[in-house]
Image 1 (cartoon, rainbow, N blue to C red):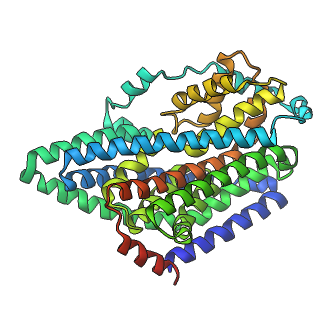
Image 2 (cartoon, helix red, strand yellow; image 1 turned 90 degrees about the vertical axis):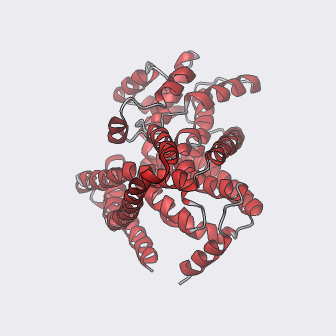
Image 3 (cartoon, rainbow, N blue to C red; image 1 turned 45 degrees about the horizontal axis):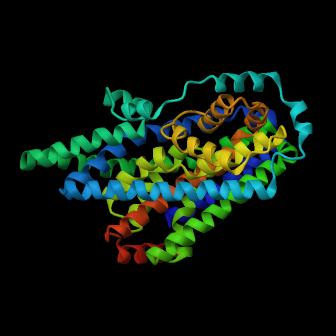
Length: 417
């Protein structure tokens, strides 16, 4: 019942935020600190919640070989889904031609945007070697302070393995972590009650600063991306539901709350604690949720990957460059690697896009145009990133024959109240 009330309040806040942003733009812009306060409240939950749940899941399982199997299956799933996102992004991009016929936009790009994009193009991108090295934290305190999810996962893995090796002597630590996990989930419930305020402020300040009229100029780009994202979501939800044998509408009802939160705040972190809680209640074991979700934010950014594939087409179509199929495939292969490990970087997708275009000597005007509406585009791709990782936990749990169907049916029934 509380989840239903919270969803209702968030929807109302979303509508009110749009109205205030349109009618009182100057006032709406001043609300941005409220949105930042909510996002900061969520960020303080992430590190202790992930650490506790992941260590409990692995150490409580006690089977190191099983963990290795889950890791391999997770990476295989991520790569298959990433390829699907790339194909859908390219396919829709060729059909809608988002960069064709909008030359008038290029004359309205401010010098500020072009300066920012030029700086992005010169950003140093991590090689595969650097990515592997940076997975291992030099300080877990620093990793937690910076919100580096993958480094927290690696530390938690080693910590859990050490607990397994110590055995009975580590029981006090396990009891402590179990208590911490319960406390952090209760903590999350308290913070989520501030979500309507955060959503209202985030939407109002976004529309207040950019104006609702911005969508008229960029409607083709926005429509193309959101259409592709919806196609991908339908594909992945139906695909997984058919294989796992779970009801489509039941899954949608469960994903609704975290997806709405991710969309309205354009922040995966804001919705992550809620999403992890929902997946566990839906029947996915804690150890799989704790491993797959944070790992997915490095290796399974479905929305960002799809966006990048379409953005490359947009940027080249805008300046009249017709990419061959072979060239597109080469760029997509490069993006699959360069986009890994940058989920926590602000405007990460644009940074990767600018660097890629710059290295190929393509004009960056398309990135400058996208920068002007990146907040609106980010809302959609962030939501798909979150939903994609939620669905990944279900698929991996079923692949491991650990999905709890009885728990799922009971939880779906409770959502109908």
